[in-house]
Image 1 (cartoon, helix red, strand yellow):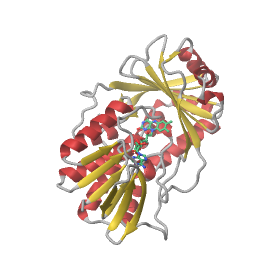
Image 2: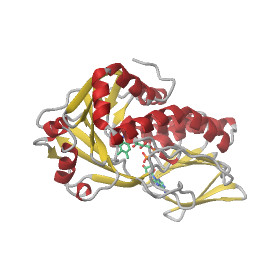
Image 3: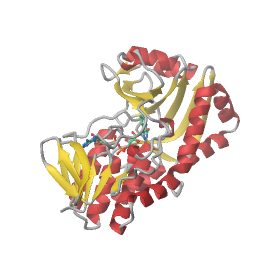
Image 4: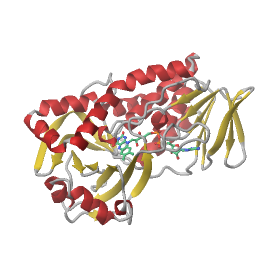
Length: 361
Ligand SMILES: Cc1cc2nc3c(=O)[nH]c(=O)nc-3n(C[C@H](O)[C@H](O)[C@H](O)COP(=O)(O)OP(=O)(O)OC[C@H]3O[C@@H](n4cnc5c(N)ncnc54)[C@H](O)[C@@H]3O)c2cc1C
């Protein structure tokens, strides 16, 4: 029997599989997609993500990521800009996720792609997972890394949440090394350069109608929030016929073991915590959680012990991102005004949404 089964091959699952396999554990990762694909993601990676990737053996510069050094926040006629207190990066998810899964295979993990785990439950030997092709796998430890998708019987509580939309664009003028934070009525968007010279518009909305189907409606909604958004998005050409959409994102969710804790089930990535997207720290948290789950399994630490330790580590970025998200919704103009008056405060907030322990550039 293998030592651990990882369900899901995003950053969290891949980091767990790589770490386990490198330590000599026998691990199988099941990823339902046959090839890594675009995901609804702003594609912003901070220094904590870069350092986690470096620990696994990946360099963002070598992967062709675009550097980001500046941020701007706009609301109505106001707009403030500041230098980030760290080096950040932009990289599409498909090449990043593909590189991580390749590392997992090279490390010795068995990576099964194009098959889903349809159900998982405990039996006398630990965990038993039934695959979509009828196969059955057994392992004493199960790493749940299915991201925004729920595994039947182990779903996160609550089914309400925001809608996430992603739309790559060609802008009239390329964005040079800056990420724009663009609040608008009922949501906010991030706009940042992609390594191919285009830009990625990624938005979180409380409710989406035509925006989820028609690029023009999404561009109009974001443009209505600020003069800066309107000027950057004027003449923008969508690269896709419609935005990629994900619904029911439970922002602020942080797993806590209650009386129903499931022995041997280690939750990581979005299955453990969902940070408001504006922080751009979801991938860093997923990588850190995957690595830590692997270390806990190798050391024989229980899942509730692991969850409590990870929760403490993620508490600060979650709290700061929650506060900023609230400010963007309740008083975006005041936030832009404050950031313009005191860019040091904006830099501090950007640092506080990172996982503690990263080394500033
Ligand atoms: C609007 C928006 C913007 C964001 N912007 C950013 C950003 O700029 N920077 C950032 O760092 N984070 C951002 N995030 C967050 C980030 O995308 C996630 O936190 C991150 O992808 C979580 O990684 P994960 O490995 O947990 O899940 P995922 O990356 O979602 O991977 C889960 C994997 O599991 C697979 N899977 C699902 N179910 C099964 C199954 N039953 N069997 C087998 N495989 C399965 C899926 O195919 C998928 O590949 C954003 C999120 C949203 C919604």
